[in-house]
Structures are given as structure tokens and as C-alpha cells.
Picture 1 (cartoon, one colour):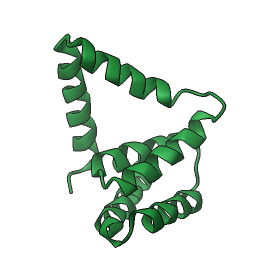
Picture 2 (cartoon, one colour):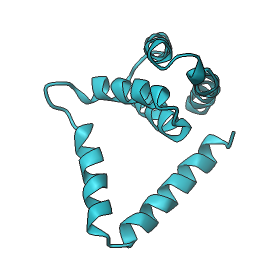
Picture 3 (cartoon, helix red, strand yellow):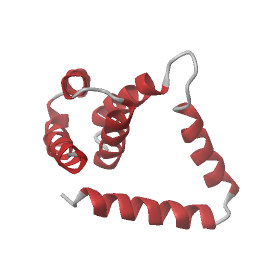
Length: 115
């Protein structure tokens, strides 16, 4: 598993390249994704937790990492995140266990960097 700082750098660089492509469809999708997490009837804090659960169910480690960082920024506690990951595991089934393992490793790394 790559280091969190490597993930952040790669994500930022690739997002920059994607945006620089000038493709309207890509730009619109990225805007839609951003807007989905803006506060509305559900606050941004709740939406990030929903994104985390969906990411675990869909088995996207990059998405899990992103939403773990955002959940930390939004103020979710470790216990709350673990409880949400449990919901994701129940919905996703045993095939999500490797992603759950990586989520726990990433949570530890996020916590260590925050200290």
C-alpha cells in the first residue's frame, strides 16, 4: 500500500492533468461529484460518512482513503468511522474484508500524521 503522501500527490497531479484536458464531460462529472458533497438537507459531515460506506462496498481503496481523510477533517471520531465501516462490511460482504484491512491501516496513518 502506498504512503498517504504519495496517494495525495498522485491524486492532485492526475486531477490537474484531467482538468487540463479541457474535456467538458470530465469537467462536468468532477463538478457533479464535488457538488454532491456540499451541504444540503444532509450536511457535508454525513455525506462524507456515506461516501466512505459506499466506497467500501464498491471496494475502491482510493475512494476509501479519500473519504477517510475527509471524515477526519469533518470531525468523525474513530469509533464512529469504525461503526460506519461495519455497515459497509455487512452490506458488501466478506469480499470487502481486504479493503477493510487497508482502511484500518490508512486510519492509523491518518491519525499518526495528525499528531
